Image (cartoon, rainbow, N blue to C red; front, top):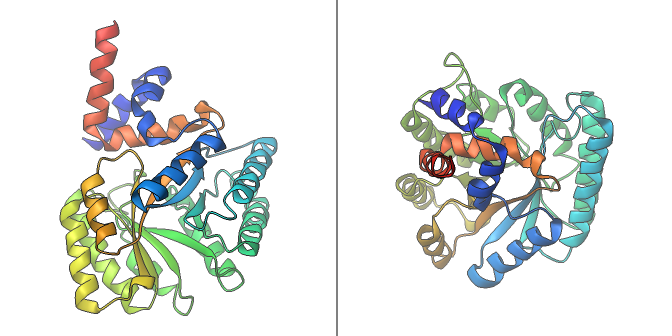
Length: 300
């Protein structure tokens, strides 16, 4: 079913993807992203992490353009302590040269450290998992403001947590959205979610900060039970969700409980850079794909 949804999402014309999947993207400029970040905090006390969309870059010019745009974004959020940034190795030049990628990531992380802004190195497809974790383990002792992501769909993740010993890591724990073969990952959402709870316990036991990334209310409540049972202090956790996913009531409930809630707020300098991200969102969300298809047939 997941492969079918992915196929359907990839068949839908880009203009329609932009129109009907756009709630997941704050806009086509930094200013629009900042406006969203400000309103989320002002009106709902919700934190944000800003992502500039783009991935799998093969052009040094585009990579350096993305790095420069992130630096401008960091300047803009210097006084906005309710915002962080998220970056992708494939956007920073991994497929050109892993060392070039590392230089670019360190350039941004170093600038962010000077203003005490958190940078999360996102986890992408499984061919980047080892690189991302190795880079994180190398950077974390020097840059306490850097975090990364672990995915509960992968069989390997429990062992990957052991690699973080002694780092006091900052981890976003989520299911993950990239397609992985069944010999390397769980294929059923229930198994992924149950494994998320298992991994959450292990991360807390080892003293790491965990940003719990799920939209499933049932599992959010189970995570809260684990937090209560383990007596995890508030400074060691937060809850993260995607902008565009309708979870207002749960977000409000968490904020009222005194929990930190952070939304993933992407923006696109070019809408072509947003397409891969939006199509993945559609593949994960049958209701959104059906909405786009319904409007496609209405127009034909």
